[in-house]
Amino acid sequence: MYRQTTWEKELIFEKSKQGRIGFLETDLSEEENEIFDQVIQTIPTDLIRNKPLELPELSELDVVRHYTRLSQMNYGVDSGFYPLGSCTMKYNPKICDLVTSYPEVQNIHPYQDQNSIQGCLQIIYELSKWLAELSGMNKVTLQPAAGAHGEYTGVMIIRKYHEIKKNLSKKLEIIVPDSAHGTNPATATMCGFKTVVIPSNEKGCVDLEALQSAVSDQTAGMMLTNPNTLGVFESNIKEIIDIIHEVDGLAYYDGANFNAIMGKVRPGDMGFDIVHFNLHKTFATPHGGGGPGAGPVGVVERLKHYLPVPTVDYSPEKDEYFFQYDHPYSIGKVRSYFGNFSIILRAYAYILRLGKEGLQSVSEMAVLNANYLKSITQKIRGFSVPYRENSFCMHEFVLSARTLGKETDICANDIAKFLLDHGYHPPTIYFPLIIPEALMIEPTETEPKEMLDGYKEILKKVSDYAYSGKRDIILESPKNTSVGLIDDVKAARNPILSYRMLKKNRS
Ligand SMILES: Cc1ncc(COP(=O)(O)O)c(C=O)c1O
Image (tube, rainbow, N blue to C red):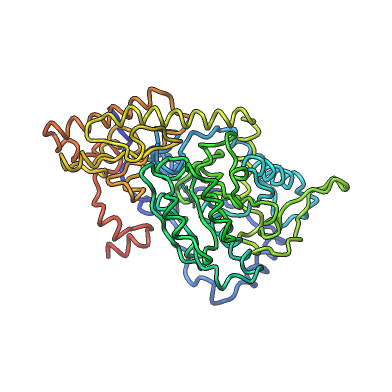
């Protein structure tokens, strides 16, 4: 029986005792005091606090215990199975964290002279080369800090491409299939385009006829998530790209699901012009929690001068890595400095450790695990896998609880809470929108068969309880977690996210 640790819910502010202190104060030297005063004087007076900051007063032990307890009430990849579809929540080797803790990494500053950060520039340069190799692109920037940020960078490149060709006034639309990740249409809109959504066919792939009729001279490009959010590898990629290129549109590959295809196929070989990766899904940083992340973008040769500046290049004559600003059509900088370096370094260590065969086997195992779990869960009464009932999936699949809902009134949300109570993180629910009562499951390559079997058993239990008139057992969940059944609507409408908000709410 799963039991998550529960500690008292006292906030760190409520534990505060006046005068308690967690560190030994050291006196500043005369020189340090002088510097301190000088720095203070540079702060505009209207920005200086007129009363002390309200901070809790605690001993070091109080703080250590508080955060240790919070971590025990948390759930993460290191504590259990986390098949949150579209997030690739796999186990990430600790060696990748270790390298980011080295003083050579911790004690550098991006404003240092480029001669003193040659090692870091080498890592940025080599990782961008490896990502170019893996995707079949010509050049890669590591600046973007998230997948959606990579999409923004890529679609701004599409925009600039048409602007330079003096076509922007007529290139107004970006085509996005209804099986795309939700950030794709949002990105197209943010970049000033109209999003044209096209439906999927009965196999969960792009409907070519619908694509043909949506394409026109106004088409600036198309964004394709592949494998798409149904876990399906698009079957007509060559035809899709030809249709888009025919009208001088650019083909964008949302490569956030790269975990399914590493070392197997390359978007560049398929004809795509722009690709983004999610390092924080595929390459050793967990997704979720709001970051930090990295969403590198690769482009084909003809678009390399549109990338954000600077890129990092290598001069064999000088045997030196350097910042390259010579990109005449650059869309400009998209992030301060050179991206999230610690995430870049984790990805570098991950790829270096696994090598080509290792990466291939990651993808093979991710796809195998997803197909195994699909095959055993789709047989459970009340569940089905729309679009893919009789065919394989890639790294994830979408189980529908529609029949279960219709016949027993147990919905995807109830199933998610029941899973929580048994020590498993639920799948992504109610997404993609084209599948009713969706449970989007991405087991990842790092889980053993016993874990997948255990997950299936819990889904089977849901079905058994639901069909044998024991719905209440499901609906009482979760009881074994640190936080019990919450009022979803209240939590969404009235979130209390800080101590200040809590105090306001109480008064
Ligand atoms: C297919 C796909 N595209 C884009 C994104 C967006 O990435 P991010 O959440 O880092 O912005 C995700 C995130 O999970 C994704 O799964």
